[in-house]
Amino acid sequence: MWDPNVAGENSHRNARMSPYPGSQVERYCVPNEKVSWLVEWRDYSPVEYTANAVLARPQWADPQLGERNFCPRFNEKDGDVERRSREGFYEVKNGRPRNPVGRTGMTGRGLLGRWGPNHSVDPIVTRWKRDSMGNTVIHPVSRKNILQFVAIKRKDCGKWTIPGAVMNPVETSSSLRKEFGEEALNALRKSRAERQMLEKQLHSLFSQEQFVIYKGYVDDPRNTDNAWMETEAVNFHDDTGEVTCHLCLKAGDDSKEVKWVDIFDTLKHYASHWQFIQFVAEKRGAHWKEEQYLGCQG
Image 1 (spheres, rainbow, N blue to C red):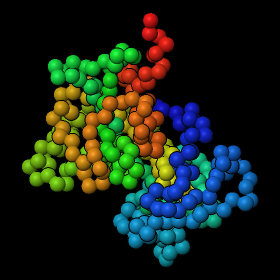
Image 2 (image 1 turned 120 degrees about the vertical axis):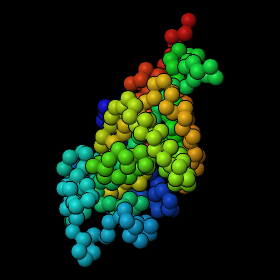
Image 3 (image 1 turned 90 degrees about the horizontal axis):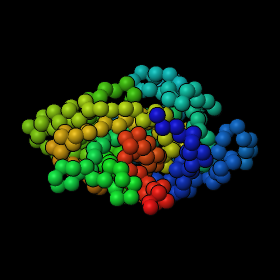
Image 4 (image 1 turned 45 degrees about the vertical axis):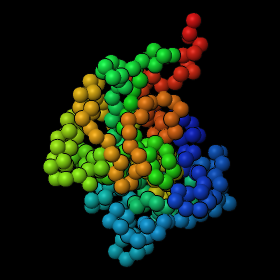
């Protein structure tokens, strides 16, 4: 699997960016050398922020800490909520869970619903790029096949991202198919007959060859000191293209656009997704970066 430790200080860069997504709130500035909780910083004064959409208490959000009858069991399976981290045991200080990677310059939950880990699953659906005759397309410089993945363009930042879903790790693959269908295929706006046909296609797709790319903390711009994203990224690959050729991509309500995107190193991805995509390309022996081959041309 992909190892986030090779990223060094960049593994916690997005989580310190300002302004915070969907707001004008500026984080307290955290330099690289002060990220770790092991470094003493008495003057650390993070900004407290939880979005109104979270405070409105939708089904996916926790109450505020201290509210009556809300006593979350951190580092445990808490009823239907998974509060254990894929990173292992995390510290709880003054009743609040502490980001296992380090300081972010913000306390509270921001846009995240759960105190502590917020779990998601990111399905990376790939196929080989083909020409009109059905032959795989080879990059002219690297001489490697070009890989494509299903990507959605986020409405908030305009970056291409994996059509993932926030869900407990124990939820079934049927939930994953459902979320992918809603985000990348606009399943909610299809007729009953269309949804039944789509379910058959998705069942075939998610039965294809697959491997887990990564499980753990995600360097996400929504992270705070007390709430953070974790994911399981899984690659579902259609080697022949016979399954994915029948999928009619159409953006759901939460995305601006959806399409098959060629995998190149210059594509602007959301959060840590570029690292997942790079790992998939290298694992599949596909083209990734042109520069590394330029010196080999003779």
